Image (cartoon, rainbow, N blue to C red; front, side, top):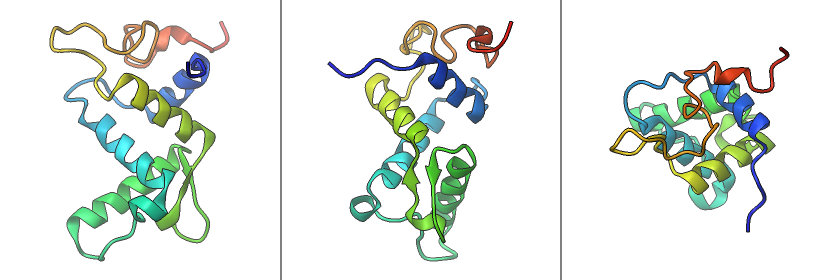
Length: 131
């Protein structure tokens, strides 16, 4: 059995990401793919591609976004970033619970008390915040 999730840290990560809950859940797929690239860039490739290639430019932009969310760190260049502890935690969350917050019936797939399952978007019932 895997180690339980620190829900306070999960809520802090979701709060930092500050993504609205409307539209599709495709952004979670994108975030997971970017985190997987950083998890093992030797195997999965770097965030750099041919400059001027729109897809490569978007991937590099995504790497800079997840860097600003403190999910990855990097040295001289973002191309070979590595996961922070929060990045590892979020990647484990997405692998465990999937990238869709709700099923087709509108019922939450993610555990009770997680990001949007608590009825936010993003008040998160002030979990972990001083009363």
